[in-house]
Image (tube, rainbow, N blue to C red; front, top):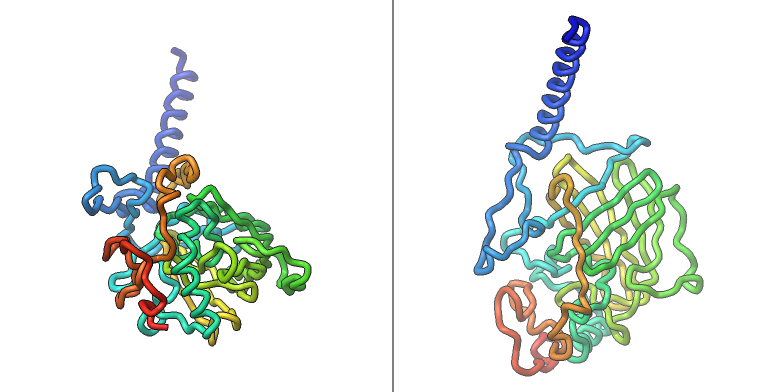
Length: 312
């Protein structure tokens, strides 16, 4: 080999070595030794998939990535942080007694849901917004300078066009859907999404959360999304619904970054839902800890409870 070829070979090797060192250092800083997968928990630990095991980062906070326009990039695979002593899936988790401020119409709508409507997601109906924001399932965000999209396990998605702040369309121009009609805009480094045009729990198959709280055709949801650092996504949500709630209420949530190269997998609800025809109505009696009656804390009741069981 000539001296020139040897020199080129050595130079190329040094360049590749430096590149790999930088790449490895980058991976360590964001997802390497400082980030570890939480151990599997519960009776089904051996069968628990990596998708639901959170990535716990214990290093110093790292800055959030930025889009080409300088705004925070909210993209990533996000896994919910379970708050100790706080019910999961309940939009009333930040309220006194974990109970939302229902109007009389709201109470009747919830009683109707508890006694006549099976959990919509259990029978493969879109959860929609705001329910997906309190879900225990991870989700994925795809974000560019002009689009914000969320991908969910229930083979559903939603998207918003990010632009200058503008009013929502007139009510008569909106078709009711599970994810509604939205406008999205930036408030500093916070992405704001306002949504209306949702379905109504009193006569349509939709719940506001896993506990069967209602949503109406008057509901307006204001989401404020931010990424305080590389490994966390934060939401402050306000729900305004004069039909079913006495006053606006807030819901907050934090998600952990799930790691590079991970995302929402395939989920075929209709093909896998072998118990669909046997699912009864309602969420079960909501306990004092704010959790629904079956799941973490209690078995499914043999017969649907009467309206008196809900304290209305």
